[in-house]
Length: 445
Image (tube, rainbow, N blue to C red; front, top):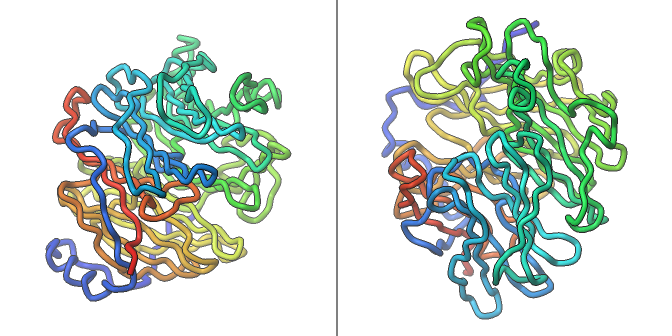
């Protein structure tokens, strides 16, 4: 079992580099892309644990972009942008978040045109809200209980034929008190009728779970998917890390460890390694350790951050996957930002920056991706370019009035509504909602 290989692609700033120095370095690259920003709602965003999956969609049939976000008490809100009139709607509260930062909205559009918002009510159940009209976010949304599988972290996507998948994590101990608290596998549900009826992955495959383990010696049996991405090819790319009690016994989310990659084929319900190994319909611990491990990280407790963090990003260049992820420093230093690339035979991992939280990314062309990143406690969103899954270059700085906590690139985006920036609330308490919702897109020249 080898340790993570760290080979710098570019010069990495020292631990004492100032934010101003970093900004100046980025400023030299400005001009490659100019962004326009619009604050669509002020002092409304609560702290949210949302992952960079399914934040919004562009509907070409009506020329509107629909976005979702978590407001006070983690209630779900939606807004729409009319590209023909260049106007934003007022926020529409569509569902109750039950005052838990895990209960954030994720949104997709069904084939029949209706918008669907999913919430995993933390460790309880998976719920869906459906817009009353197709191609519109207006009105009172209808709520449906999909599953009582102690669900958290819904990650939905819609395939080309209109089949809807929602991956979620199950807190198994809430269903069976004899199961340790750090046993939390991934499952999914599927609908082929625009969200009217659903089947679980267990019903479809006979497997207890889709990704997970139950008996690791280090008690790291919790799966944290950082991001999943549906490609035009129909393949879904997945990056995740493990959590659990570690050597201290069964404790929820005490430690994080390692980075793993897999892909999923919705047509066959099979998972695959980067090398193309067919793992069948379930990933267990033996599979992930033998075929899916990208980087091994130490089982330690860095200061004030889980390591690796909850968010990791996944993309592909010419069919080969690459990952972006960041880890903490147990000495109290800056975050370490890593780029892991599949070279066709093995994973290569390099540190490319420090002090950044990578938030989401978008494909610019077959060779280039734009990465959105933030710095703790500072306003603005910084962008970087990753080429061929290997090089890392500063691009520009997108100004925001306040610090940003979450970024989600809109599905099939159309400027100026390309990416959603959810502002960082001043308090962890979701009763306090004073972050801004800002949308950014390339400006017209």
